[in-house]
Length: 294
Ligand code: F3S
Image (cartoon, rainbow, N blue to C red; front, top):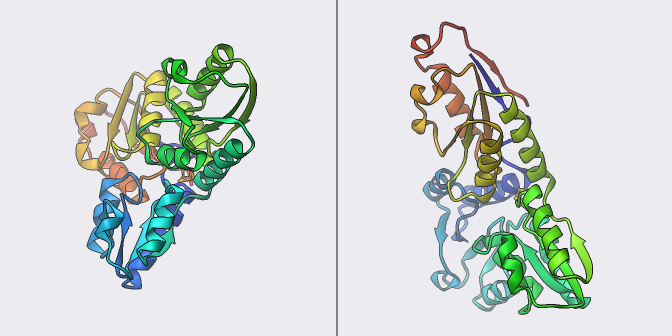
């Protein structure tokens, strides 16, 4: 039995930065909270709350003088203005890649391009990019949505940083066919996302079963799971090691592990540990070998 961890998986640098910022606020006993969950991982959000950094749903819940931590998915311009008006201190954990996508969207609108944001409508990052892109901007999540895009001479296309590359390419091709015009395409899928997707596909192709670890509310984890399912018949999405069972891996020689960009290393290590201690003897008469890439 061999367990192999994907070459790229787990915390990306944007998430590391956001978590470090929130943990420092906890250590410094800052009086404050995050506006919405800092990242899409329920276990880490619970840990932060136990350290004194809770999660609030709206700015109205903050008292003047408190600190508000903006999450890695970013906020719209009016949220910054509102926080300042309320006398709050802002700790901005917006991922620099999300900030870039926001700036590209605002620039496209300012330069006279009709902003089209390709991404998941209900994802907080997409909502924040739309706000920077102005009131005319539209979100396209799938090819069907193209019918809502008004006919314009010039389009500025921006991508959700964690969107699936192949899906984006299909949407872009259909968009250009159905809405001909001049296109400025900003390829804002972040490197960490692309690396995790490529590594997951490679791992899935060489594994009998793949475990994808991450929050069920994490878009990038869900995309990894969808990709893995396309290349491996036995794929499982779990949040924590407690969901693992030896039945899931019965008859498998090669097990792959990958994890979303918002999955703490601790959860990956726990999953490996649980698998190492499973009663594999009753399943297979082979020794287990664990290979973990840095
Ligand atoms: Fe940023 Fe990419 Fe991570 S956008 S939060 S580095 S997945």
